Amino acid sequence: MKTRILFIALALLLVLEPFALYAQGAAGYGSGYGQAVGARRQMNRNISTPGRTGSFYEQGNGSFSSSEEMGSMMGRSSGSSAEMMGSTYQIHVLGHVFQPGTYRLPPSTRLDEAINMAGGLKKQGSERRVELRRGGSVQRFDLLRYREAGDLNQNPFLLDNDVVFIPFSEKNIAIQGPVKSPGTYELISQDPSLWNVVELAGGFTTGVSLDSPVTIVRYIEGKKQLLEVPNVEQSLKEFPILNGDVVAVPHIFTEDRKFDYNVSELPADNLFIPAFNDNVFVMGAVQLPGAYTFNPHYSIRDFVAMAGPVQHARFGGIHVLTPNGKRVAHPDRKGFKLSPGDTIVVPQRAWTADNVIKWYNTFANTVITGFTLRELIRR
Image 1 (cartoon, rainbow, N blue to C red):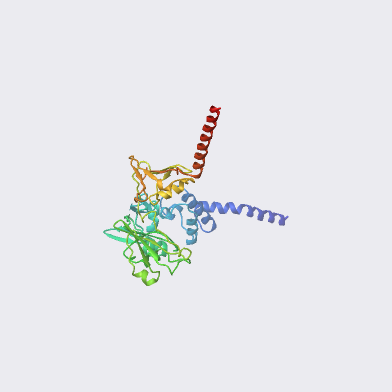
Image 2: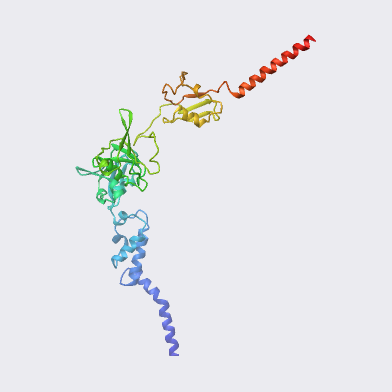
């Protein structure tokens, strides 16, 4: 009997123990497991409430048992660290970004993060001369060095009321060919040579031809110049690079080819075609007559080739009709430059083998018919 009573008492203790611990923790007093469970539940409930301010200590209405407990609770929070710590910085991001304005950001925000919050840089914005205005001083930072080389000194932490200003990019070049990151780059005073430009693009890749020169496409007073530089380190370091240069690095697979280096656009340039109709029309002896999108690098022959000349097209008789009604004969010989709205007319050859046979048959049939009729009349 006594044994049965003892077992029943132990069973009741096991059943009632969780309720006792929960009541102890809900009261918010005491120590141990109950207090930790109660505090954590209260803090999680406060953190998930939108718009709450104040520190963790205030939201929890109690103390933390350890720093690990606070770290665990921070990991579960969906809000920003600035909201959890009860403070944010006011950062002004201005200049050539997509969404300039004032932002409330956490104290741990770096320069690059603030620019991304403002939508990122526009095409004409400078990535390498970003201005950080603090108090009465102005510092400039090179975000390309941070992004490509991991230089954290070029991506500093921001302070309250800092002004981030993105100016225009001033000098730009383009590099194409076997380099690790071809594209358009902004130049600063630390990049005076062709060698520096190759380094900006990550250096050469496996396919670079060291036996062929590097070609620089440069426009001097409106005229295109092709400058060749031996592909050796010393020569590349001695060659000064200028704003608007296009660098063409040779590849081993194309080193025996010749190119005209007609670039489609200049670095950081905006090509504007002032015309109501930006098409060129091809008519006459072609398979696909009609309108073709104007391209300043295409010649008359290029447009005719796209339209597909027929077998009996007479290339020597091609002429151009301008929008104002002027007829330009033999445009290739005159160095005529096509403009939007021009019409290329491709005539057909008058004397062809088929035409001669048709004319001969017509003439022969006419003669025979006339002779036959004459004989019939005589009889």
